[in-house]
Length: 470
Image (cartoon, rainbow, N blue to C red; front, side, top):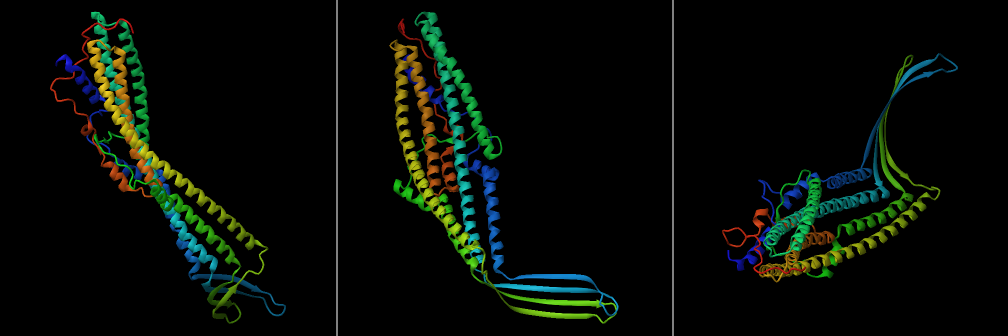
């Protein structure tokens, strides 16, 4: 390759090395598969599901207080009679009975039944919230692993470039075209990069462990974000509409609304405690007395009637209970307003976060192009002797950092978009599938080197003596 084409070839090689993923194993893990495994493994979702199942059982329990109740009793007694005249008598007494009670008017139990149905709505919202939270936790963990991989590959690419620069500085010093300063600067950068590589590898291991904790197994090679993917802005592109959607549909607001309705019905339930209750009651009974010295006596009886019960004086307990429920309703209404304000603020922050991340992506894409041109210029300047070693190292580091930050900004756009939908209460599994379409196996996203059958050349020595001063 001709010397004048070397800077561009090296710049292409540097760009190809950055963010390049390792070889893909037989089975890679994408976000959709990770979601399925996390959903089956996550303890928080399992807890919310169990709570929902338990809460649903409160409905038939409360309704049973409004349905007929049938009970049976049986008893056997040994009786000894000692009259003042006549002999003692001992006999066995047996009694059997079936009782029936049918509520006709029972207002407190009616309210309790309605409250139990409302409680199911809260449990369903909590379960949906747990699933949404899992989507966010999984997405953050997944893209944190990708970001840690990008950071490690960036440092390794930078390490390779610095090592190449160090070898060139050594050669140039040996032939007298460069000073020892170039070699020392490159060596210092190389040593610092080795330390950064160790820290980046540790950070990647930590992020992989966090993802493994969610999916219940060690994380294999992950699918990565496709190159050239176009990230869309939130739709509708209106902060006001997203805020309104969040206030209307947020799961947190829905739960607090139901809590307020339950508190309102609790006032009625406690007030109804001083109202009369009416029941239909009936019974079938059989009594047998088996006397030893007399003819046994046996009786059968059947009764049916209406029973009314009403508290006349409870020491002020009912009135105090009503006042307590009213105060709790005031608290619930205040909590609802607080939740609305929090959700409104969270929706604004999430919407602005998505747009801010998109703006950063655009800015960093422009910075990447500029950094690559700057690196090419510095490489060419070093070749002709108008740039020194430290200038090339700085240009390389700037390009690597820009490409790493660009990848992180793209991940932030995706995660912030999911956060926005969660705040609005519309995040579901379809959003996981939509994000998964943006991913591809690592080899499919690797940068393609310039069309050439020869490997990228090493950094050529300057054609003119390098400056003797730094």
